[in-house]
Length: 175
Image 1: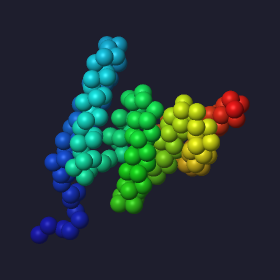
Image 2 (image 1 turned 60 degrees about the vertical axis):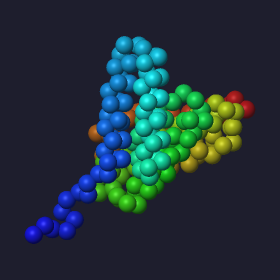
Image 3 (image 1 turned 90 degrees about the horizontal axis):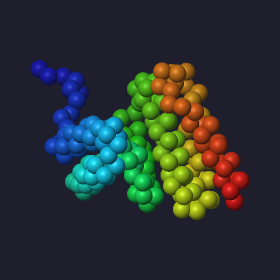
């Protein structure tokens, strides 16, 4: 007799397809970078953008795919869309699958901060100083939380709290 809840639910075909394309995207984008082939990187990114949009239209979205697409997007509007969708996915994922360990708690805190930081940078590039500042101020507590976690030494990804504070100072100086 099978125990209830003892196995993970199977991924839908949409979810399987999206994760397969995500892994291919990461591999191909890294190869494009290694070869310094900007045109190939654009093609790979566009193909992945289509897959992410198709999966979203089919009712499946995932923070890691939106985040990855946002990192490789150079258009401010697209970055705002991607990182905004990432935050919505993270909020949903936190409710559906609360962090069960230190890595999960750090991940949610860190990526909540990082997405807000990236949104703020895109807003600042558009000259929307007050909006950028608001996102940076929202990001700061998440960054502090992530950096205050004793486990962070194993997962350290740079001084995000300091980068956010620096951007806040730059915004104040520019205007």
